[in-house]
Structure formats: C-alpha cells, structure tokens
Image (cartoon, rainbow, N blue to C red; front, top):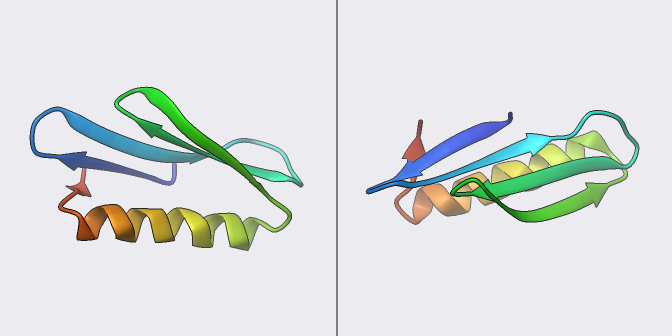
Length: 65
C-alpha cells in the first residue's frame, strides 16, 4: 500500500502498486471499491502519479490514516 486517506465520516481511499512489472500497475480504491487502474512503463512515474492523486485529495480535505 502506498498510502491510505480518510475523510470526515466513513470515507476512505488508498493506493496500491500491484506486484510485477513492467508495466507497473497502480490501483486506486475508494470505500473498498476499485476506482481505477493505471499502467506505467516506469515505476517512478507510477509513484509520481500516486503522489499527485494523494496531494489532490489532501487539498480537498482528506487526511492520512
């Protein structure tokens, strides 16, 4: 798991990097439901994308678990 975030109430989200690669598969979950899956040729690009999503959610009021 790369990160887990919570929002007021019962909202939660997390990002995981699936084993293997390339391609490196990044999966995002919201409230225990798969939200999206993205593939990347380089692991550093996948982590950069995960950090960008985390920053966006944090700016929207989410906080770390």
